[in-house]
Length: 403
Image (tube, rainbow, N blue to C red; front, top):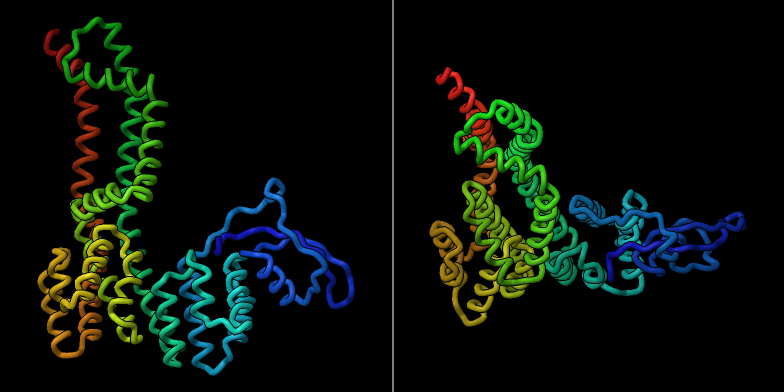
């Protein structure tokens, strides 16, 4: 599959005629040969290295590397550099072996007469359908550098929103993990000490204390069951989310209803939808083709299904605003602004305005998320620890009143 890195054992000669051999990582043999050629090595033989002898960790292409690739290519093309030379320069600057191999393959494909868009489509794991379609539109209109420039800004904004949400969730997730760790420590080490003390005293324990002790016994005896259930549950959810459409949609609906998290996800998705549609319209892509390209980048199956419905409605002759309203996924303000944009012929500008508004909303919520959640998390943590303290000290207080 295109985009998967492999290791190849090669033998060749350098400029001085010295025989050399080694291992190179690339997406295919052709890419490996091209990369060795760029290193001024004449290839004598090259073959895939056997899997059992490979000592390489699987590499992936990060979104940040795609953003940088797009920015560099846009800048070089705008400066008048030929595309083959630009790809050569970009390939030499890549630290990631997989990304370097991808760029070398792109250069080889373009040099053989294939368009850049068709070359990009060979690596769906790196370049989305939207990316390919925008590149194709740029090539057709002879404005590839401008389209790539707008695409760079778009990708940077999408990555910034993702980073904002990710960073905002780090604090609450950390506190929850700390709460779980504290609870486990109390159940595994502290509660048994009190249990031994109470048994030696022959005391009649309150129901709440007995319940906590039974929980402690269960955790200490069946901790491996709990661990396996947790791991199995996580992998099970991930598997079903990837393979089962009904489960994925139900799971994504639950995500959108979670307190605070749901609203910020909705705003981020709406910002992505409107920003993506705006950049495709600016690039001259037909709206139906734009919608088809957007289905797989929404990040939520509920909205992906909604985009498919919008696409079908538009094909049937409905206006964009009416189609969006029928999905019940977009706020009335968004529908009204899209309607005004369609009526005035400035739809792309209106979509950019909507995207900017929701991006600012996401920024604001993300910046204040820790402040919003902190009191709730402290209360939950206090209740958990307080329950253990009360359960352990209730018998002691009862003993004190009976003496």
